[in-house]
Amino acid sequence: MTPIFLPLIGQYQNIGDIILRRPLAKWLQGDSRLHVFTGDAPAGYTEALQLRPDDHVYTSFLSWYRAGMEASRRQKSIYLFKPGEIQLSLKGMKEHLGVLPMAKRFKARGGSVARLGSGVRNFSSFYRRLITPSLKVSDLTYWRDQGSFQYLGHGGVMPDLAFAEGGELSRISSMENRRYLIVSMRGDRPAPNEAWRKAVRDFAHKHRLEIMAVTQVLMDSARSRELAGSLGGQVLDWDGHDHMQQEQRLRDVYRRAALVVSDRLHVLIAAYTEGAAPAGLTTDNSSKVDRHFEAIGLKGVGQSAASWSPERTGQFLEDTLRQRESYLNTLGQARVSLDGVRKELVSFVEAVRGREA
Image (tube, rainbow, N blue to C red; front, side, top):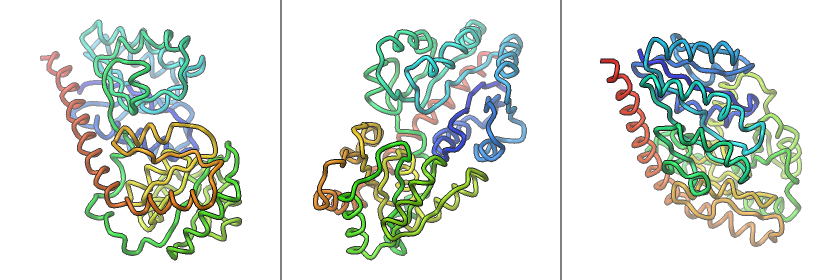
């Protein structure tokens, strides 16, 4: 079996970090053995990645690293960089500089290196120079948004891996029994203003929707509870434990939602992949939501609404709901694109395995 080394560390109290990493692990679970570094992740996070019993999970970076160096001595091995957000900062360079000797050794001994589903958080010319060697060592590269590709180069663009999760289109297309309007806002950003709140309340009343504030990231818990009270809605909160159960609870309400309003990218994606129309209203000027939906062909999903009137915000929500059907057609196209990347990755792994013959 071809050894594949893959770090899947993340924000352990963020369900979105699981959703965007799990598909890559699933794609690799063929005739290969995964060696996954999870760091000090709680059991719930690791369980939610749905690794196989014979995959090796490492909590120690040094043990994982040593295993990689030893594996490359015996077999042709593969290294995959962690999918998700890259911070172009000193802290963010840990993986890209730290694993470079191992990645280069894999290649020198007939193995390969790939990077799928990553995107940059900020654009720093200094750290771009530092990350360049890890970009050059990769044989297969796909970024999750056009901005990251244009800034860092090397490879192509693919949809975020989280678009591969969720329900089948045939099951989520109907509006029947969709009675919720989901709200979920970051706890580390300015709170939505009264114009935002009025627009959400009025929209829910007009369409006879129940407001449900949800917590998909633990740090947003207080914001979810406050919004539920302010908007006259319910709250689906989280205590940070049992990640799989919380994800299932979230998906259960997403499957019954007509619309999701959030500044969290993976709240929007998770609800969208269960059939809710995504309205990415932010309280700052971040372009993250818009960039990642543009990668699948949807423009204008993310909007900075801090200065909008209730009428303008309400019209945006109306326009979003009206386009729900066409948005779901785009989801189908995104999944076709992702399946193409999956097949390319499978061929990539098979090519390394063929070198053993």
